[in-house]
Image 1 (tube, rainbow, N blue to C red):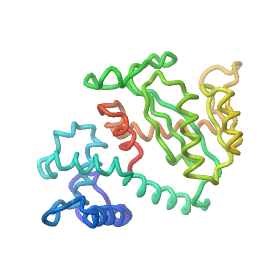
Image 2: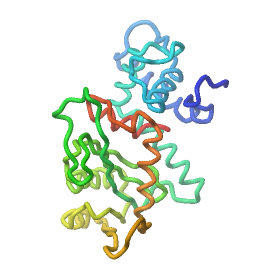
Image 3: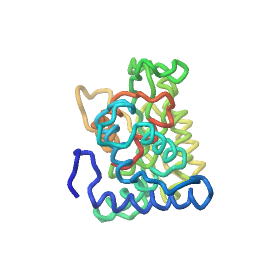
Image 4: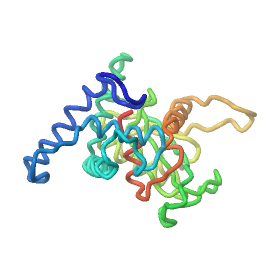
Length: 258
């Protein structure tokens, strides 16, 4: 296939995503949720348009002239987000990468971290907060990764939400979705009560602390793995600043297929 834009899906990536999207469309039609004439929107073009927005950071209303209408693209994106469609190709890709690296498909350990991101001026004030430590007004993106740096879960909150508060939600969700996990590492922003809560779930949680005697940059054991991931995320310009009025949309964009 000839690519129009660098963000377009390769044939190999589309081969992973196509069954997920075609099954989703079939289920909607069989359930009477997509009544009328057969849909004429090409699923690959729609997903390419979503990835273009994510990679370039353009507003939803400013798609290239050869993309489907922005209203159609956003409508499909919103449905896929609400129905958890993005989670499926992300899980497939993660398992594939782990197999290629000689790992088991399901992780046994994870790392938690957070990243505060400034918001756009049109984001409602009630959806924002202040991260006092990083002096950032906006939202906080709390992530859980496996030890290869691959995303397991993302939670987007106001920046003022404490790491331990978001962390408790994350460890509970990931414990349900990935019951094989028995070890967790986190930074010093996470409190002792979270370690105790993790123990009730059968998870050994370790807080990785920086040696106060160390000056300048130092690689912290296990922490360096999770610190790469936010850097990967903000290579997608849509994720370098939070433009979404609803935090769940920013969460799903960052958790979607890359």
